Image 1 (tube, rainbow, N blue to C red):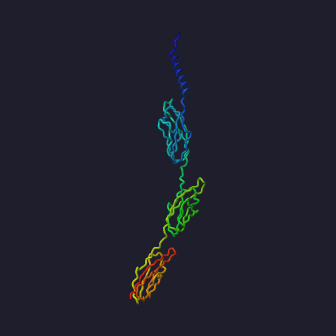
Image 2: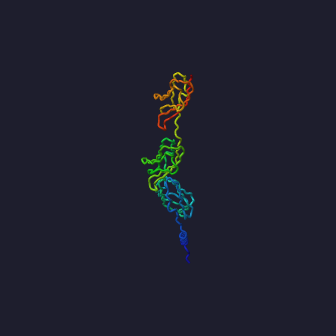
Length: 329
């Protein structure tokens, strides 16, 4: 009877082990990793960005996620904590462009058991958002005065196309003022002579040339404070009192005004009368008045001197002053 060889038994054991290993591998294969999403959302330069990459079908914890080829947009970074089945791309992209890169995933395990995978992604970063807010200048309008001519110009900046017109969206201008579009420099002009004092608040609207999508519009509230009409400065008469006179003795006194913006044009008796023998005369050489003569009657004589100054109906100053002239016997 022949006896089995030890070498043959060892070979048979090896064949059985290899067969079982193959059967286990066939019945329980290592599944490929899944990296999602299929595509990453677009970004915009200057705006915060955050998106998540998920890893599934991993048999062991995820040991690392990295960029193996290409690069992320400047300002973005890849964030992953060992053991987690997701990673984030987060930050604020700084520059527009198309950025293609490869994400590599490595799972924990031996060279045989540790799974790994790669996936290519693209992030498109668009141009930064433009601030379409129109800027009005000046920020505030100057005050006005009733009865005086007023003019103020308003313009805009940060506009892509020229302004096409201005209008009042709310409120009203002070009476006497009107809004006008100046096409030469695409500005608005508020001009006229306000007729009423008060505080007037209104909203100015502007629209710019362009399609419905690209044409900019804007509004800004303004206030114009209209003060009361200018009051002529009070004229100052000199002297404040006239010297006394004596009946039968020659008398002479000079009256003039100050605080006047234009020369005095004439003096008159507004009320009362001079003592008999005296008269009032305007001297244009120095724009003054003289009372002179020889009074013939003693007594106390009150009267009012009026003066007017050269100028238009609006700017010419006028004034009056009461005097009393005592004529002694």
